[in-house]
Length: 374
Ligand SMILES: [Zn+2]
Image (cartoon, rainbow, N blue to C red):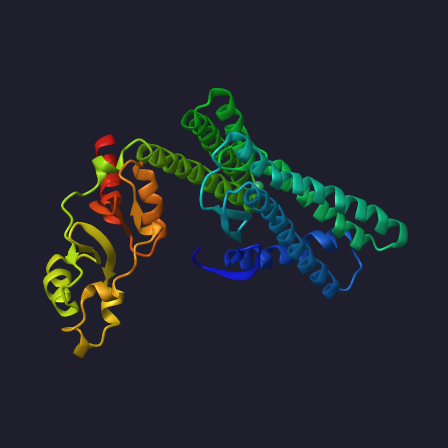
């Protein structure tokens, strides 16, 4: 995600911190050190308040991190890849590369986060109890209690049945299991998310106008965020659903401009790249696909060698990520297009080139489809 820095890597999952957390961190420390702590635990040195304020903010971040890690590790153990976790504003987002393919998997992944938060709530409650026995520092005990409450709030807030929050995912998995219809389940769960978002916005507005401006604005912001998230997740779902129904054979561009492998690099640049303005071309021998040539590969050939070098010599070898079977659905092609470095896939059957699908094809289709739906 833009505006994030990588903290560390665990089990191939990159944990990132969004810059918004620096603002949040400062806000929390500030409000703790100058408001909550002096008000509840008077007569302590000011720097101690700041120390505890920063400590509470850090433990809140750690709590959010453990919640997200719990989702991600369960997800990985069920075979659903997670590449990054981004910790930002009021929580974290784990980026799943794929959606779980069964309702049970979705349920397990969704519930893992809140279970971790409940566990942390219990852990910090017990810790506060134990510290109470050996120490008389009201401030220390109060701070630990505060963290335990934060974790309870995290668990409860995330369990609100509004997609794509954890509770919404739990709800979706249950409807999905019962009705055996993922689209329907997503629709119900995201309209709950929509409603919950509006509810928070109105609640926030009400508070803002009746005096509690800070909390009011905060709730409006969170509500707006949830509303948008649930709408876009539904759109994404509809899109992958649509592409899951169309066959590659009907979708692909059939007349592919390909290059014989014996053609020289110089000629390829002049007569293909400058002429057609594509970013890459399939390289063939007769009807058989032998590789792919892109600008980066051409660039690597010295100018004086371009006339003698046949393009087949420098073409990228054919790999699974560059090709699809015409019997597959467009969704399969789409996933490869958006993750491989070429932004396109070749449609190949028995080593013969049948067609091509590019990122532009997918995006244009979505645009035309969207316009016709208006
Ligand atoms: Zn969660």
